[in-house]
Image (cartoon, rainbow, N blue to C red; front, side):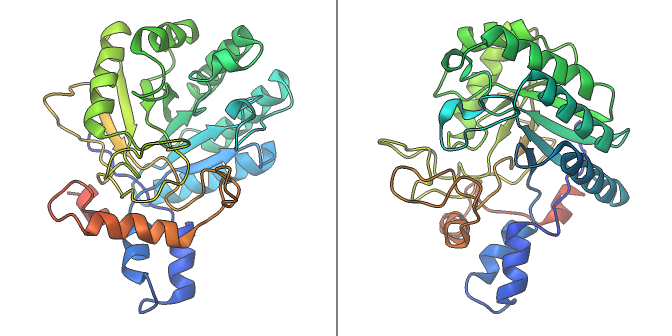
Length: 308
């Protein structure tokens, strides 16, 4: 995957907000930086199978025309988020597999990077039917293997499940049809901590690769209760790249913006907008915090840097 150019959605939340405010509007510079940076497109249980297929086709077709690859996230497994702020999912295993097949049909033979089911393995001990969930993840990877996608199975983050336990869960699913695992999705842990965790997992999993969500980790994690839920004082992280080239992390395939920057993590027990709701000021604050730290990895590049 090294050197693959990543695609930025021209119709993202940030792009639409910028169009509404204008280039001279409040927060325009911050919104422009976010809009110009490749960010994942999420496909989830709020979409019917046909809607997910159509969106996958639309995104991969546009990216292919630009000579780039999109990042897609599948987020519809039954009992997703274990009753948390993003609770939901497909009605049952059969419905879920049909939904995944629809996404695969939409991707076709076009290139895409696919993150498979954030939190599904990290939360597997919190939901009933762990063996069934393992099987669904295995089958989802097998379906995606018939497309042009490069898949990464979500494996939580360095502050959640220890590497031995997570490796066992990943092994139960199997990575025969995946390039590796995805780490730090929608979280804030520092890249160096996720690389250490990823390298530990890679050793236990036969040298597989991993990708890291750096979308909001420029200031590292917050502390306290619900520190993962719309915390203040965070910053955009390193610009997405498929060539990290870090000698200390040889199995790190890519740094990606997986979480949609500016979308809510949930109500956070304090009345924040529901999960997935666009929060423009939060997005602006993330960009401003990164800009306030000259020379640190939060400094963003435009899409042209990905093409060099």
